[in-house]
Image 1 (tube, one colour):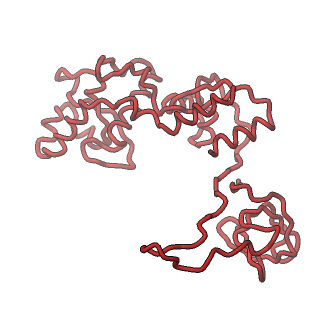
Image 2 (cartoon, one colour; image 1 turned 90 degrees about the vertical axis):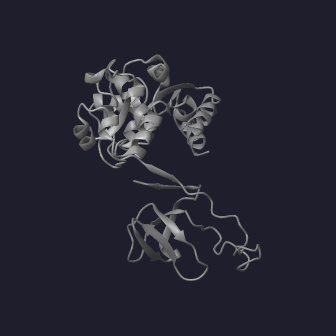
Image 3 (tube, rainbow, N blue to C red; image 1 turned 120 degrees about the vertical axis):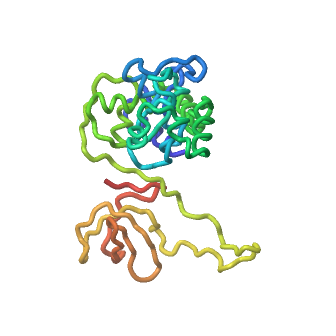
Length: 289
């Protein structure tokens, strides 16, 4: 598992005493099972973030009234407060700005009276609680158990809490910054503007021969490694030739005859094996900035 591999590597290099991970998108304990208890959502800034994440997950991150996606979404009341509606989470939905404005103080049944199928869907989803099992990603749970087995203190947070920290500290939306802002933090100092990007690439396909749909071999046996000492994924420096000066580029194709192909950004370049020096042997990951 990639996370476990890198925890082991970092623990060998640094005196790490604790680990922090984002376990869930929102903390259902913060909401206290709102579909049953009817806890109102206007109970502080962080509490509102948890409920908003809850609603986004429950409504599939699209507008409940029109199905719009990739647009800013707002929390709306299914039954407006002016007509006796409450702030219970079961009376809340997610809608785009235009639908929210058009609905105004109308009841959802009045607003969607000409769209019976959408109305039926909204009323059904509104009364359906999002179970805790749907909120907790099973992969995250397994990662959490793996980290605990390391014997280090593991601190967990939620996606809603991470978003709250980002907004409170006025930080840009970047995954690596979010990773540093998980959990309860007072302040966050960023020492770099460009982290090392590590991508799991694997060690190639181990299938010896490709099959057709009937299970018969379609091509010949898998070729052996063509050049001893070199393989796809090696990181190299180019020290000679027209591409001299390139550093820490990834080997893309290794051939027994002719040149090797390397990847520089979006370009594929050809270099002679006599013009390169290895800097890092293939270990299943690709490294870039």
